[in-house]
Length: 106
Image (cartoon, rainbow, N blue to C red; front, side, top):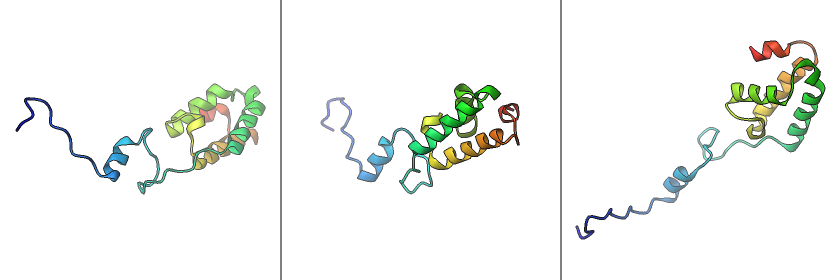
């Protein structure tokens, strides 16, 4: 075939195939090619302020990071806005005394 034992060059992929293969980190979302909006700075600030308030109850940064990993399989800084909102809800439940850190850790 004229390539003297060398691997034949791969045909160029269409833009869609190349984009699908080059997407790193993996996309989250509904498969339409648009990823969900990342956690906002305002959400991160609020989460960190809640952590500061809840630290005496055992809800420190490492606990929240572990909770994010368990609930969303990603760290705090990599949440999308909906996930951050869910996390804020959980932390607010601790603050209101409706749930304990131990209950969330279970």
